Each structure stands twice: as C-alpha cells, then as structure tokens.
Amino acid sequence: MKIWILAKKKTFDSFENRRFQEEAKRTGVELQMVAPEEFDIIVTKEGRKSILHNGNPVDLPDCLIPRMGAGTTYFALAVIRHLERLGVFVLNSSQSIETAKDKLATLQILAANNVPIPKTMLAKFPLNIDFVEKEFMYPLIIKTVSGSYGKGVFLCENRAQLEDIADLIEISKDPKINVIIQEFVTSSKGKDIRVFVVGGRAIGAMLRTAREGKFKANFSAGGTVALFNLNPPVEWLAVELAKLVGLDVAGIDILFDGNGYKVCEVNSSPGFEGFERATGLNVPQEIYNYIRVRLEGSL
Image (tube, rainbow, N blue to C red; front, side):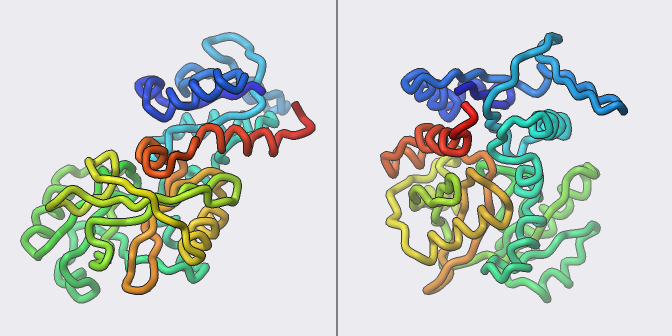
C-alpha cells in the first residue's frame, strides 16, 4: 500500500508525521512525505490530466492523506482535487477540508441540521459594539474564521477589551481576516472534549483542561489531557458532525453546556500527541487500517 502525506515542509518532522512514518515502517506501508509546492498540474481542454512531482512524471499513490488542516492553501486544494479526479483515494476530500477550515460555514451546516452550537455572529467592521452587546453577554469569544491549535481565539470580558481587539483588527486592514463573535459557554470554561473520528467511528476521546488562569484547553497551548469515557450523546455528536461536514478523519471539539453539550468546532487534520498520551490509542494504525478496508480489492 503506497501512501502520500501532503504537508508543509516545515511540518515533515512534526510529532504526527513522525508517528505516521514510524507506523508505516512497522506495518510495511510505503509512505512518502510530499509538499504542495513540489507539484505541477496540467489540465488541457482535451481532458488530458497530468501531475508532475519535482518536474517529473510519477506513479500515483493508492491514498493521499492531506495534513494541512486550516492552513490548506488554494494551491494545495488544487493538488488534492487533481489527485481525486485521477482516482486516488483522498482522506479527507478537498470539499470537506475546504468546509472544515471555514468555522462559520461549518457552524451554518450544523445549525441547519439542528446540532447544538454556541450562538455565533459574523463580524463586520467598523464593529457596532452596541449591537454586539444587544446580542451577546460578556464574556464573549472572538475567533478568526480560519485557524487551529487555539490560535486566533480571544476572550473578551468587557467592552474595553472588545473595543481594543476590534481596533487592532480594523487597523490591520487585511481583507483575508474574517472574524466571528461567539457566545462564551461558561460551564465549559477552561475545559472541553476532543473526540477523534475515523471512518464514521469515534475511536476515543480525551478531556482537555486549560492551564490555571487560561481559557484555552488545547494541548498545544499548554493544557493537560486525560481519558474521557465516551457516552452516547458525545459519541453521536462527534460522528454526526464528521458525517455532515464529509470528513472521514476528524477531531471534534465539544463543550460542556449544563447537563448537555454543544459543538465547538471541527478539525480536518487534528493533532494527536495529547490524544495518544491520554487514551493509549495508536492513531496512525487506526487510520491505516481504515484505508486498507476502503481500498480492499483494489490493492
């Protein structure tokens, strides 16, 4: 079984990619790390399609695993789409990655399907603070529409903080920065649940807890992790969300909301260092096993 992992070159040696390489070596998977900029795509009106790697024709893999998540560029998406159209099994699809990297688009899909989510508003600038205060109570959350590992997420506890962040965003004048304002779910302050879904199955979950005095529970932001025993509501939410967004592999973040739960966001290329530490599960093995099942009969 031949697999490519599509990632930024600077992340080739990340924990996750090292784990994929270790498990590939252990199980006999032929694995190659590739970066988007190494490819050239040719499409002609006659319908001939080709893809070159480092300027040369290349034998295509059985499967492509994109590992760029919210950092997936237009060019990277084009490479993923091209390989899909050449018949390569892609995990996850270009469409699901594009949807998942847009937090507002994901929430719109969930709301349309009656999935519980925090109240959310797309911000426009200059920000009408009075209008925001009519719709939301402090504290509230400000997020960039695209982001991961807890980056681009801010807690505003009062009007002065909201004004300062709004001024900073407006001064940047970056048209690519889109921001959402979100209800702060107080019962989940400093903690959340990360569920890992592979092939329509929740393989496990962990409880993430923020450092003292912080509100971001991400392991990458210094939070602690522990095993969370999956219960039916959490498992259903995670699996349903992955299905609605079209993701075969997903990290689903779920908030505590009183006696229930709300979905925070979805990740198409979730990190799993903390997850493996908390659960003892072998994530690359789970993903490789799923790929073998999907490709059964074609290898």
